[in-house]
Image 1 (cartoon, one colour):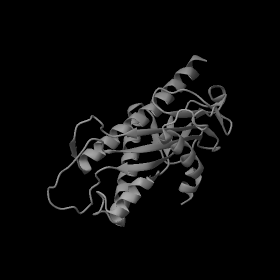
Image 2: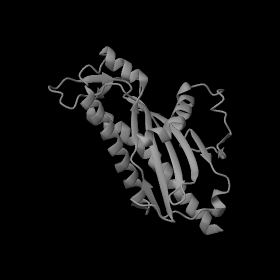
Image 3: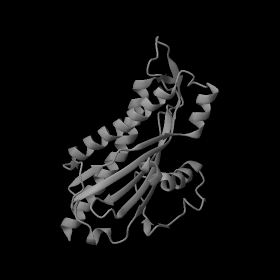
Image 4: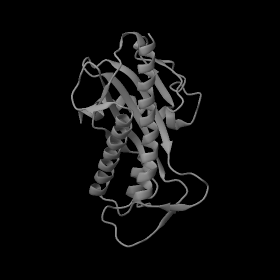
Length: 229
């Protein structure tokens, strides 16, 4: 569980700030973190960047995606224990959901990066960016058991939420370049719609696509600036 340990402080601090909903909290107003400076971003709620990254970093041509950790929100766990909407879920079902979310993350990010011309590799290299991520505060409004039977339908207005915590590092030295976090919710259109495993997965995929595109666009912008020097 070394991965969870590495992300413990980052996920707890950033996720609590993002989900607190209070724009005046100290963490949300934080301008500097471990030498990283906060910068505005059109897609991500909180981004901290190492100063001077443009001058002394290579233009990354490949990306190394670490396996990601997925953890449920305390609210989801409490509902499950109380039998609220999750009474059919056992430990195997929870593990299957975590595995599915982690696999979907790898698939979406790999597709987006490769579409942008970046190689996805398994080993560090001088022009390889290492991406470590965690999905925290995962809450699924209407989860399905993996062995569910019948054709029952569940109608919801919002399929759930999750928060991404991301660290970008130089793969050879391990030096941290960027920390970022963002929270996303599923459909919330004010009207009830069917929720099942397929719709929940589609909502998660859309959120992950936004995050993957933000990473790819950041790499594109970095390449453009390096080329202009």
